[in-house]
Amino acid sequence: MTTDVNAPHVLEVEDLRTVFHTPRGDVHAVDGVSFSLAAGETLGLVGESGSGKSVLGRTVMGLVASGPRTTVTGRVRIGGRDVHALKPAERRRLWGPEVAMVFQDPMTSLNPVKRVGTHLTETLRRHLGCSRTEATERAVDLLRQVGIPEPARRMGQYPHELSGGMRQRVVIAIALACDPRLLIADEPTTALDVTVQKQILDLLASLVAERTMAMVLVSHDLGAVAGRTDRVQVMYAGRTVESGPTRPVFDVPAHPYTDALLASIPRLDNPPHTLLRTIEGNPPDMARPPAGCRFGPRCAFVTDQCREAQPEAAVVPGGRAVACHHPLSRSILEGAGDGR
Image (cartoon, rainbow, N blue to C red; front, side):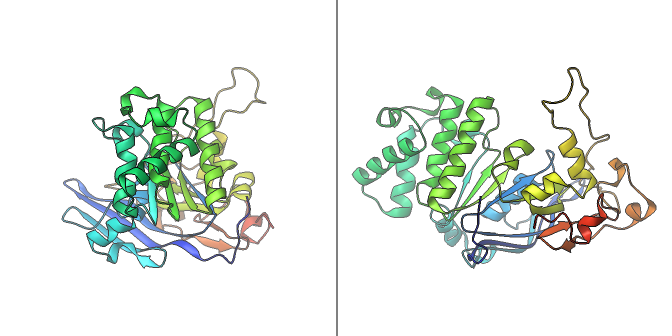
């Protein structure tokens, strides 16, 4: 994948924080995350369940806003517009033409009492002002583009009449209906078999290339992210622990958490019955996170410094950043292994 480094940023996220106020205390689900994304570029957000990936995606989208039980601070710009400074009606006008989201469970994100065609034509008529005939023709073409056979017949079917892979393709078609500049794909292959997973991921990659969209691919599957993203952001307990170009980060991980995630992936060259490496312990209670490095209680290299002070991200040549007091490779912090 190649990206024009001079392309304007479609998405800019600055010090984004999402805090849920609960009876047990404040939960900092997203805690000071920053990144930017250019047209035609794909960013992978990876980490264990509960690391804040989905909340980050929804906050960027504007689906999580400040209220009595939630506080959102920081800045999210999509196409130069501050999403959280917009009025609700203005924010809704962004959804579709500017930014769209592929949700991880198509069975619950699709209305079970509406036909597939209605899901698509409603979006087209509301945002693009298409006539009923134009919306129907475009909807059929969208279903064809995402690889659904007999698209005209599928228009009259309900979500429960389709397979999981087809439902996910319908969700993708809805997201692409208004030609958004930014697509957020939140675990788009959840509960699909491996063959369909590959088809969906290949489809998304081809659509990004054809439409020069920016895409945020949220996943806990490092294999899915490895060959389909330009950059990767590794999250743990609401924070970014490592980020940079995908290949260098995966080839020479600097943060112990990134290294542990990669080590837990099954390898074809391992002998039979080889035990998988696991990360000992559990993710922290986000209502009562540890005082220092949040990965410290599970890290094999933890020191008193880690227990007392939260590490700041060290930015190094090649676009890499590592938030660790004791990175695995000092050469990375000195500019080597940066993918140049």
